Length: 135
Image (cartoon, rainbow, N blue to C red; front, top):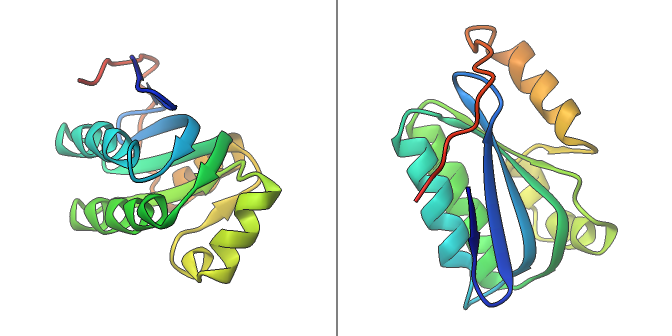
C-alpha cells in the first residue's frame, strides 16, 4: 500500500506476523507527519505491534516529525511492541542523536539488521510472507 501526499510517501510491508516495515520517503514535517502517524498507528491497531521505520528516503524532519517518532514509540510500547529506526541518513542521524531520540528508539544501519535484532528479541514472530494494505 502506498499513500502519496504533497511531500511524503508511506509504504507498509509486513515482515512477519508481528512486525512491519514502514518505508517513509519525502519530508516529515508539520504538513505530512500526520500521514505517517495515521498509517503506522493503523498497522499497530490491526495487531502488528513491532514497527521498523525505513528512513533512507527521508529528506527533512522538523519538530513535528520528531514528535511523531516519540508518539509512535509510545503507541508500539502500549501494544507490547517496539519501534526501531533503520537506514537513517547522516543529516538526520545527527538530529536523532542530538535530540536524544536515539537513546529512546534503537537506530540500525539497515532494515535487515533492525528486523534481525527485533526477531532475536521476540522469537514468537512468525514469517507471514505477505504484504497487507493499510488505509
